Image (cartoon, rainbow, N blue to C red; front, side, top):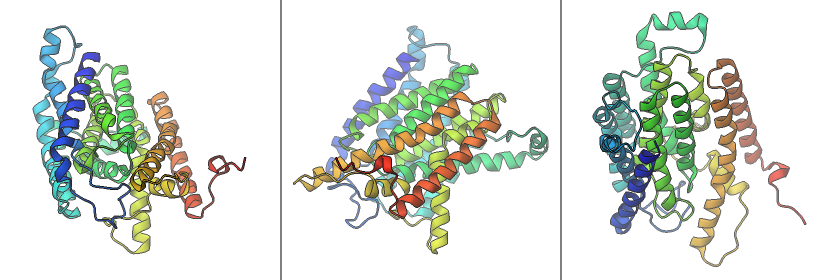
Length: 370
């Protein structure tokens, strides 16, 4: 696993730097008044290509690593990398097109991620076979298409959830890194080295990308990077629960509750305001943290001023997600405990959001007078 991780990290590190240099003069620019613009200048959004290169190439050369006794006992036939790449193709290609042109409509992006979700079911046989309730699971299994529909919905939706939280340097990337490590840990606990290897390779590739993304923001993951994280993490999570009934289906729910709840809450508040859920705005939790919690930076250079404030935003959310990842890893078998923590997060999120909207910043985050 260590050799696999090192290879994925190095390939991603080099490929992401190469993407930055290749597209530095052809960066698709956000409009100056775009709500998601929190940087000065035009930054390449092709980090997703570096992520894919690191993840895929490390797994592709796994046979050589095993031949050299540098990798553990991972069944390459069960891993079946070509099918995974085929599943990724529609959504990732659409993400690259959007990153380069910014002209792909929300409807087309949803259709492409739906296509990848359907391919995940068809090629990898993903399905939700249990809900964690003994009295209900027997009835649930009696209607298999319900599990397939829920799995396709999860694989379709999570890429967009990661795209929503991908607003500041190091935010979505760190969430993906921590989630992948948690998935790898539980996969190893149940003896699934194939899924663990995939999760470790993605975590290492993400770490290589973060070298250039945080704190300087030299390149962004873009839609392609967010879709890659969402598709792979959703599929790994579903297969982990599907293959090993001892793993509660609420383990990945709690693990990913931050991007999932951010998406659900965003859809709710936009519908409540009478606007389309696909319309971009500047009212996500991380954007409120940027405006209401992060201290102003006094610097003559506007670009450096904005960059420093941008970099101070992600750590607030890192602490927030730690409150979900830690209990998920500790109680991955216990549905009741995991559900309780999901409810606790949802309540805490709403309280924090309302407090920020009403300018009632918690005292611990307020600037000291002394």
